[in-house]
Length: 263
Image 1 (cartoon, helix red, strand yellow):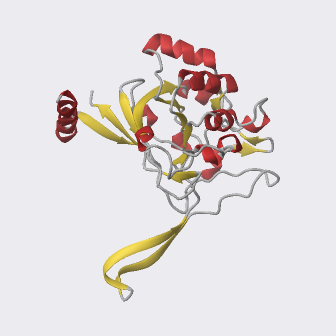
Image 2 (cartoon, rainbow, N blue to C red):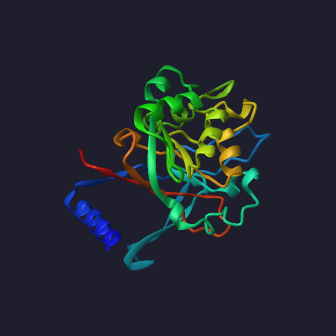
Image 3 (cartoon, one colour):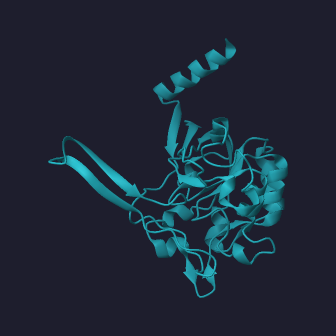
């Protein structure tokens, strides 16, 4: 009965506006910035295409619909464990086999916007996370941790969003020690506002691409190209991040949402 009353209370708060739904997703379309890797490492994802099937015309007089060409890791997206070699053997590591309970969880928002504005290559450390916990409370098992950098404000321009030069891309992210600390805390996953879950220069780290390598090694998840984390409190919001149920999917574009108590 208590659980039913709690859900009824949440429903009433949604209807009354006491709980706000915040959209954490970028628009998905032909101009969406996409990750580019050195050609010796990977083939790039093709540009997103939206093709009209019909629009109240001779191909369909009463309906409109489109077909899409889109990569699994395009725009605001979910990384499943099978995305990385370290997570490839988990039977529940694809988008169609993950337990749905894991798509909805409390979220911890670590504000690194000032540091990222001062240094495009800013790295969040385990010590900085511990200091954040001292101010805001412990990160609990089963929760999301996301890194606010306000980087999403660049996503209207692919050049600004990728921020690459002759030495490669430059964007903030976590250290390997930071990710290992979060894994040890039992988090469900890690997310950022950048094109991927790792820093732009993460390929040259001692553990290359640690967010991918370590999160997926431990059957945890990633979220990339999140938006509007500046609208979330450090604690107290619920994150909903459900990928499409793609057969053997390594990831999926998502409409990430947060339930936030209205101030």
